[in-house]
View 1 (cartoon, rainbow, N blue to C red):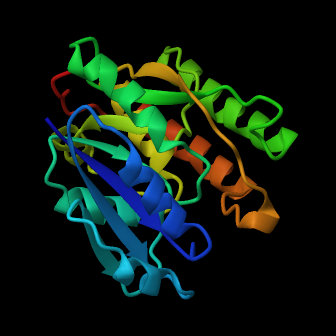
View 2 (cartoon, helix red, strand yellow; view 1 turned 30 degrees about the vertical axis):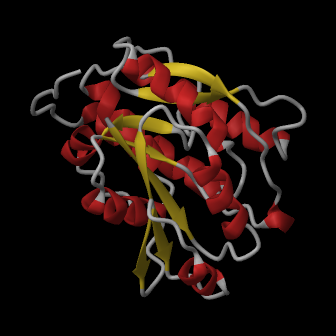
Length: 234
């Protein structure tokens, strides 16, 4: 199996070098590629990516910022792997956890795996951020009669073909809710594994806001009421 690690990047010149180094240093149990989409960065991110040298790394550049969902859409369209996982470049997630997500796939226990953040006191930058995440996740569980622990997690591992079949259209952070809503609507329940997490604050460049939470609720409601045109293999 080959895993495509998809990294959307926007104005991360202070972190992108470390993000690449950490992602490529992991001992993966399968072949990987790291596919980075520079989503119209206006700082030195592009120059740093241009100097990176690793046969497993590919970089695609958006001329203008289009949002995380759009960057992932570009990455998925160019992915060569059978499976994919999203890894943000902000160093909030530890790529050393990716083999944990792969384990239930490789041993046949799961097809879709989410990394579940525990949100300890050391890993969340605000009370309202955590409550917002839990509120959106609860809304999904109520709407789809499911029980997942972390809808907004970046770590979503699944077959590339499955993600393509979801036809995710959200261009920004709403893609997290759209992906999960479409999976749950197909009765595909993600397998969850605990992961480490360290949230950065606004002063460090945190981009998601309360508006993204409102959009996520709207997207979940839309997906719950949308007619299901069929399901994909689990």
